[in-house]
Image (cartoon, one colour):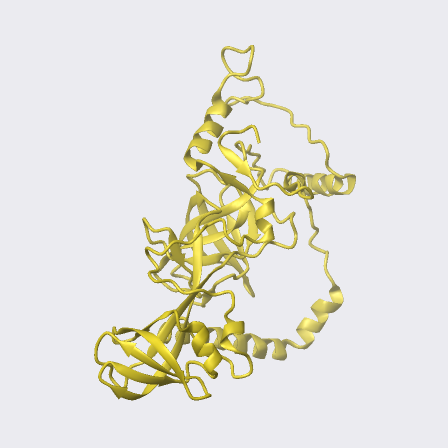
Length: 382
């Protein structure tokens, strides 16, 4: 609260700094042996399920590539209820969207910087500034080549014993790296990573897949949302899949990282961890707006110049009247308005700015803001 570089969305029940100070050691023998035996006994079923899931994800990626964002209105539920959280935009680029509107409960647990660049400079300057009464350097900083003794406090006895055993068992063969954190880096926020997909990973990489992130100083799990990396815009389009050779942005709840820092993204597979993407820390910005777009489609069955009767987009006249303020467009570049509902099965009369072709497809675009999922285990920092 006293720091001019940051503002905190306060939540009285949350103190995430305590969680990230914990060290959790798991032995290799932990786990349910019975589950492991069942897995090997049903290996044929497991392979079948794996191949079926892999084919399903590949088909979904191909369908999204051919018909991006298109959805169908269900017959058993009105469209005005099914898409209640969505809204229309006159222009994706210029229409306003309030970044503080309808935020999820997770935003009560995270930090937001008023000026991220200034906060980062202040954190680095504070680290190098001499302490009060010391003209040369701070006494709590270690210089290069200096030997020190480290004393850890506040670690539960069972975890301390496991840590000691792990250290003694690998003495001389496994190096240990100890690093310090800058100001605010023990707090959580919305971190954005600019990444590109690895050429060695050919499987579909879907939105909100469970990934392991390694930034050089720490590892953590996350389920990021994928969006485009368009510059100089205030809204970004959510992507269902990340495709080969494509650069995009991963956004997720994560510990604050001050740039520049590299990032490697891994996914757990049968063979272990597979590298799926790599990039850099882009920003710490909870106000970055990522919008999911869906497209409702219908087909003209009667056309007279710029007038067309469209069906199969909706299934009731109430839905037609509910969505009538929105602009309709066609895949051949026509723009128009819904004039009225016709009949009782969702047929509507539309007027366009030019002649409409019978083979054209009539569309309506709807948007809603999406957020990443919070990790259920708040001690996920490794």
